[in-house]
Image 1 (spheres, helix red, strand yellow):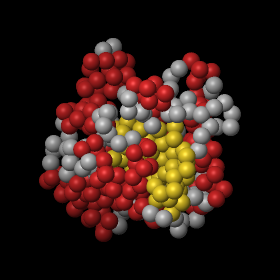
Image 2: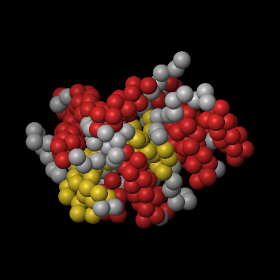
Image 3: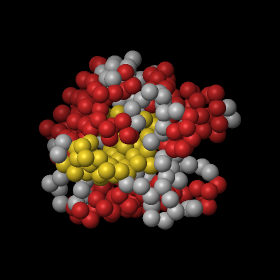
Length: 311
């Protein structure tokens, strides 16, 4: 069974406590032990079937996309087009709007609903022009002191020949560098698929959230299965091995919190999903807006440099 909202809150609290410095204090150590005992009683480790269910829901064709959340959450939305270099990449959305009265810059991937849209937007897989457009929006945010919100939903960066010729790898790296240097609050949320460099290019944020049924990984289950077993049909087995679901990403410290979804997934009630996401974004921004810009940048860099480090 999918984790309950209560379990998600406990895991979120446990993750936050583990990130606090000087955990040797008896009070914090005791709180950690108490929360861990509660989690142990709630249920067993998600099974391979549970993890694959998250993969299926993250890819559900009726799942809300970036522009659906823009319509539901932002007032006075103004979309930016073009990268001031080559053209406009429809796979990347960028613009300005108001979230609960606060002006924000939002960037995110858009997959498309029908065959025409999916072809135009390349299933949310951006070219270098898309990352250039996102960086253009982020620099506007830096100039005017607007927080940046990024909604991640992509199988990965576009793998075409033109994308490579235009500097795909360099564009992803440059986008991460721009985000690392920002002195405004930044919040990213994985709302569907968070695939590889295409995802992390716009997810180097002060807080990284993840919807309950989203996935976040360095490679797709099918890609992993092809490498390990030379058989894409082993994707379910691969997903069970590298665990791209939200609960495991939280435990690994790859994300900071999980955003609950309506029962059965965001596609069952898009309006309720948007409300839950909007509240999480608002609360997260309120925690960040009073932190000085230099301190935000210092913490952000320290956070990402510590990922994957084991002692």
